[in-house]
Structures are given as C-alpha cells and as structure tokens.
Image 1 (spheres, rainbow, N blue to C red):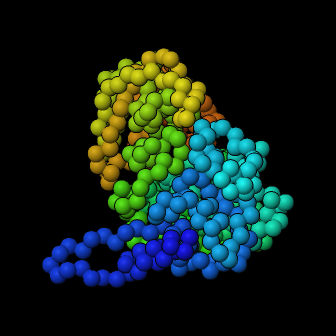
Image 2 (cartoon, rainbow, N blue to C red):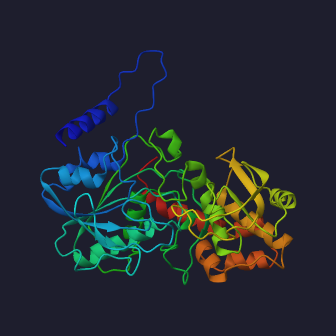
Image 3 (cartoon, rainbow, N blue to C red):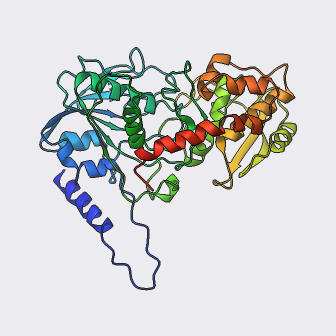
Length: 418
C-alpha cells in the first residue's frame, strides 16, 4: 500500500509541473480521478475515521486497485461496511435485479443492499460510521440509478450526522444539458431530482446541487466533501481523458452507448426493443412490426443531426450477464442501427423523441406507450401527450427550452470544472 501511495504522489507531482520542450505541442496532463487523490493529497478526509463505502466495480485507482482494497490496506482508516447499488458491488447483476445483502468474499466486510427492499442506508447500518465514501462512475443521464442512490445516501447522512465524501469522476458524455426537467409528481428511482435528462454534471457536482438547492427535504444538510478530478474539462468526453473505460453497468459496454443512452432509453417506456438481448444495446432498436427503410426516412425527416442510420434486423436472446429476459426474445426485430459521427451536433434526447414520434406515426395501431414508465423516464406526461397529439419533435423540444436554460443558470454555482 505504501508503494501505491508513493506512486500516486509521484503521478500528482508530474501533473503539476511544466517541462515541455520548446516548440513542441504540450501533451495533455493525465486525468486523475478523485479516488486516487483520496489516497494521496486528500487522505486527511478519511484518516482516523470509520468509513462505509458506496461503490461498485468502477471504483478503481489508476493502477487498477479497487478502492475497497486500497482503503482496507491503508493505515489510520477503518472500513466498517459496504453498500451495494444497482448491479452490485462487483457490477455483475442484471438491470432491475435486486441486490442481496451479505458479505464481501474478499474482505469479509458486510454488504448492505441499496437496491432491493431499501434504497437508503438505515440508522442501524450507520451506527458506527463517521463518513460515507461514494465512488461510482455515472454516465450523465437522469434515469441512471446511481445518482438516485447518491441522493438517498446524502439524505440518510443528514439524518444520522454522518459526513459524505465524494471522490469525483468525469461525466463521460461531457457537460451539455439537454432534455426536459423532471416535474412535480414524477419523482422515482429513475428521476430522483428535478434535473434534465442529460444533466451535464459530475457526481460531485450533483451532490453539491442536491444539498445546495435543498432537494434532500431534510432540516439539516450533511457535511459534504467533494474531491475534484484533476485535469478534466467539462467539454471532454471520456475517450479524451486517457482513462480506461470500465462498463458502469452490463448494458453500457462502451462510450458510444453512453452517448446515445439519454434518448434511446425512452424506448424502455414503450413496446419497442431498445436493443437489449444483443451485444449492442441502445445502438440498435426496433420492433417486429417495423420496416427499417421507412423508419429511417421518417426519423431523418425530423432533422436529427450528427448520426448515421442503417437498416438492421436482429433477434434478442437471453444474455444472463446483460439481459436475461429481453423484449421480443427469439423474434426477429426490424429496426435501425445508429452511429454517432458528430458529437457536437448530436442531441440524444431530441433523437429519442424523434424516433419515438416516428414509430407512433408510422405504426399507430401497433406502437404502445407504457404510460407511467415512459412518463417517469421523460419526467412528466408532457412529452407523451405531445407525441400523441401529433406535435413535431421540434415543437416538443421547444416546450422544454426555457426550463432547461433556467436549470443551466441555477447549476452554475455548483460546477467544479470549466
């Protein structure tokens, strides 16, 4: 562990100095996530404390060591408990599968589930805890449940006088905010806070936002410390950081999937296949009743940009490690395969609305909304109702423009990165 600490300190030192040769283009300094800093220049935050960790398999240091193992091996800190989010501590549980409490085989530490019967640490579970360390890689979409877990951790910490430490990580799809704000009456575990579908914030910034905006609905705010990422700019995508992509969940195998996810995920609230049951979820979608060419033409007519579309047919099958029971399992699905070619022009939320509208216009007798689920994903009944009323995707996007701008203004005071 001491060798690890020395290596990380050396890395930090290299990042803080200049030394580029004259007339050469300076290389980008390596991105250093908050977890590495917690073990080096920010170790005082946990030194001498009893800590609980809310983590999954993405809580890795630069050398690949899991944060659990690094803190267990460190001197002057005691890890007393682990809390498991959706997909579990090791990230191998399927979407929606309950996480069972138990023990971590490697360390023997107790694991308390935060995705099952309870989503929130209890007073009993926090009885001997001084601080909770939350370190999970997010993907930048409101309905990705890790940020809902963060919300409940902050809420429980405020109730039990426990500090929260968030070693931050980059938002892998950058800092843009897009889509409608979740409205009153539509709070759920896929929409815990009134933020847009693509929020453009890191987990640390969201923690500050939840606390600073009084969203926890508690009398006292928790003591919150965010350990910022070094050498990351909010317009950078994950593949510009130099960091290794670790799939944050089984159906998020690469960055391109994360880029399209804020829009294509809407199909989970319909009778459309969102590509689960294949090795390219969210990058392809369709339905047995669809006709690919006319679907592509209709989506394209709505002015989507920055993406190519091609006809595809696929047959979803049970993939236990990804999707054990996908829609249309064993049936031929006709649809669209997409590839993002211009990230600056591509708006995933607009694309998701345009594609949904295209399906409904082309196949009104076969397309179906799962009313409540679609509404929870989009954050209100408005998007569904406007699609049903025949409004264009541009009219729908214009309907949330003012609230989106207001959110961007409000979030400014919580942003940690330029």
